[in-house]
Image 1 (cartoon, rainbow over the protein chains, first blue to last red):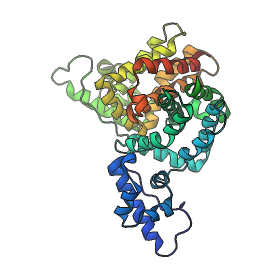
Image 2 (cartoon, each protein chain N blue to C red):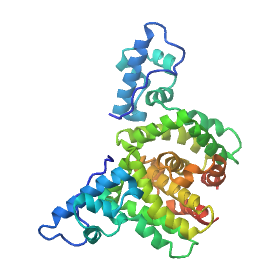
Image 3 (cartoon, helix red, strand yellow):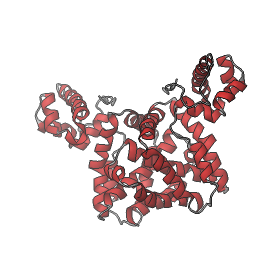
Image 4 (spheres, rainbow over the protein chains, first blue to last red):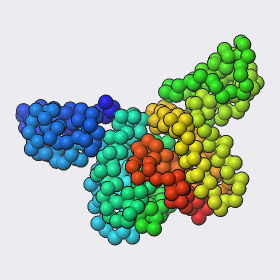
Length: 202
Length: 202
């Protein structure tokens, strides 16, 4: 079982009325089991609903899509799978900068950084949790970036974008390499965005 | 305490004679304690010797430098702190390629990959182990790269090299993002080396 803790539900769609919180918590517990046993791709909303003894429609009502439910389950403080595809809507030129700036500005928020570090530690430190995160990223984030790039090697290009962005977050917020941790967001964007842009389009 | 296991000593300087193995093991145990309590920079060979109840000269005799002893303590399968500075001896032009190729070729060896993944998981997953690894990297590897670069921003440049290389290793060997995990070493070197070279010299 991955070591993702089930968070106290806080960010669901509306405050649960009396009697609803039991269903919500059963769904979250069922989601942890389903994702843990079947991986991100193998898990289904239908399967989670069955484990929780509720209808699939109730899962969608409380939590939205499978990606939404996964993000809620792991307590993700940001939603790159939602935000980065929005950044893809702009011109391809400058996309590298928009991606690097978005992620750094989010991680600069103390609440995001605190929760993000815990999540990265779980995802990278636990051999059962790692494929769960990579399954989610590959399906919900990198696939969309690759589709925007549109070249035959687009999947590799998207993966290299992920490698640089993940490496930057590891170096700045986990390893805290002094020069990388103390650099300004603007300086890092100026230096790293051309790398991401090159992977995307050159 | 970090969760680095003390490995059975195998790679020391010569086979221990009868009666020596006790001292070697006491030194390794003392090193785990000293590094864990004081961090990489704070630990000293003298302090480790005192904890083990032996003379500093015996520590140097069995294990060499503090960096050698640290690598032995964590069971590191490769020595980038030794090898990468050797790569710095060649022309700066092409250094990015030499660094990326060296690290990928090492990680392609099954024994290195297996042990390296365990080590990366410990170092990134454990909040006490992480600063220990980053202290070692900053002192023994990035400082030397920065000295070779020689610009006022050299430490940041070296840190960004580390971010891309670490991110590539995380993406290929831990997250195993499909396109990155299945790419050839040559293809990855061709795509990633220009990034590393740009951080080093442009």
